[in-house]
Image (cartoon, rainbow, N blue to C red; front, side, top):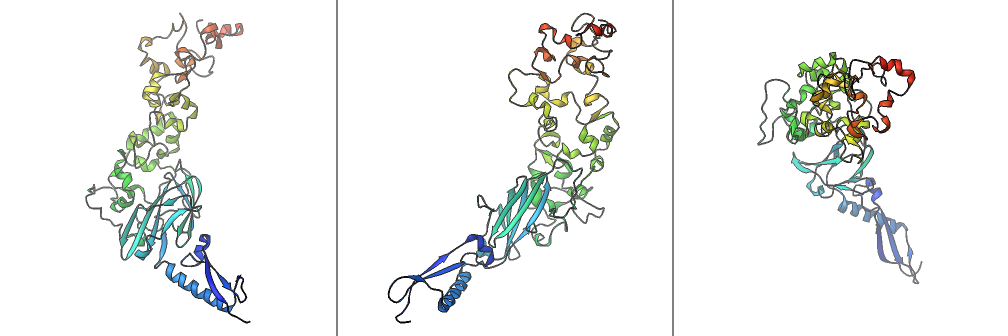
Length: 438
């Protein structure tokens, strides 16, 4: 070749999706613009250019790379399955060099959200970044940069512990191997933080090491379950009598609850038992740690909690009740539990007494009346209900105890005798009604 080549520019391109393949994660492609002899401009990739490319990449890595080790302590593994009632997961990152702290970024896989750490803690020459991340049901994908480490979590919300199997492959449990993992013991010890005073009660398994991570269960709840507020955590969260591991109770946990709530065993012997009590999972309704609702219920126990399962009754207790619907006043004022026991009774539907006795405890003008309402001689109890074979005639034969589109919460309109004719609708039934004194 004649003449000389002159380097005009070095073009550097960065591809973030490939950052995990080199330590710096920034520079992945170099190009050269060369002035050849005789004018013009073209790309040039001969041996000198390739050597220069290699040198520039080494310098770029040296200048842009992270100085120390960056690793994810929790959750361990790139992919995990989380079964929990709590949709918040804690992601803990260890950084060994202070120069890397401002370079670490946790974000969703598509970059739509970047998370700030809740705290940065230094111990033993390393730094620990703690993130609280809210999960949605299903797959959740995050990336930690550098070193472009994927974090994939499949979240399944729990409503019951009955069929919970935490021994399945891939199920994430932070305490699966140790009460306190080795990397965490520098900060998380058996000593409570300064200013926190929760004394050992002398019974149960006092667990002060739980406070540093789970203090919200102790402090933030307005209504606290006493074992949780007293830090007797491992009295329940254990899988053997030696307390060598932390476990999540599962199956019929009523045995655990009845260990303290001894008088409540009587519910299991009653004739009509509420489903959650019958299955033995008290935590379907109660948060075993604490909540903002009385009795440590997951939400307002007056009605909101009930209609999570009893969806057909939601129309009676929601704020937006349709205009025509008339709702039983006591239901709106006091909720479902004013008539129904949430646990068990000896009466159908877990009512606190027979229907007539329960109704007349408020509607006192009809106490003791067995005939004469709504018309002279009409029975109120003691005979079979024509519309509900096998059941006794009662107030609820004509009135809906929750609500109705009709006056007086009746099951039909009084115009045209539409309530009465539901039973008194055929001469063929004359003999049957005569037996009721009609």
